[in-house]
Image (cartoon, rainbow, N blue to C red; front, side):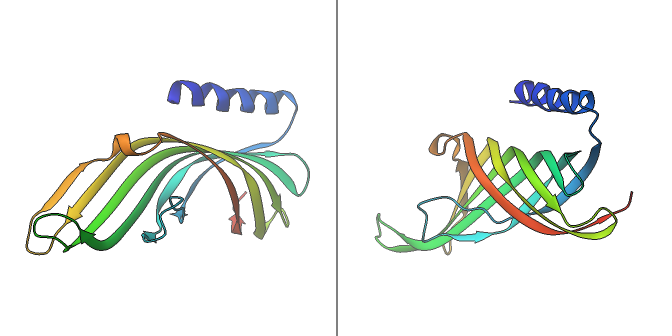
Length: 168
């Protein structure tokens, strides 16, 4: 995956430099509130999101934002398991880790100080690990890989917004 991502990011940066656009590099950190589709009985919790970003000025209020992020996705559920004896209370949790490459069209309210922003665009993710954990009352915890149970590539559409503070 990184053999493909690095040339794409470098290519975008070179094209923007050739077009005399201002490019700002930075770091970001936050939380991911994504979920798995078709999993209504699961409880989702926000997990870590962080990475590198490059914002390319298109106009005074619009930028093209290219990010490379590390992202965790976590879910759990309580339920019953068929077996011997039947209907034992069980808690199952899934932890997945991804490298995401979102590309956003971003609007910003101003250039200095605190500024509101909104962004939309596609995101391509590649799973780097997936683990599942079973916990039964009065029993030990069982951990295993869930690598084969999920698609390794994730294509999604992202809508976001917030407030940021420009230091320079």
